Image (tube, rainbow, N blue to C red; front, side, top):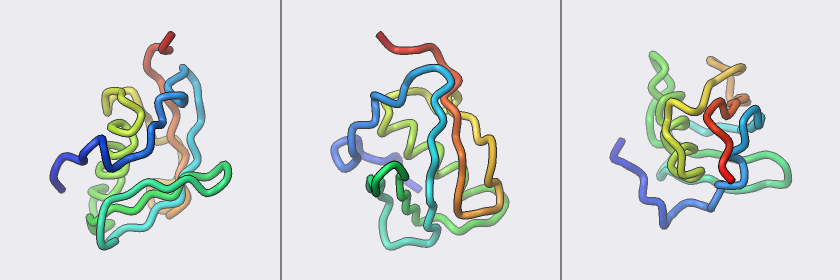
Length: 95
């Protein structure tokens, strides 16, 4: 997976508050990488196959890019092997 382009992603910087829980519905093996808001749930599509955590890493990278934070500031709390995932922002809050 190449580095995602910020211009192709929605601005999710409002989620960069310490302790924010981010619920996702993930579609691996998609035609392109994308993030779409669907009510309170974010739908994330990645081109990577879901084996050995590769899709989770791709989702984490895509989400971090859309939020404008480091990948290490996001922690996968639930859904390591499921399509429904819960990431928590553990970095410093933005002012």
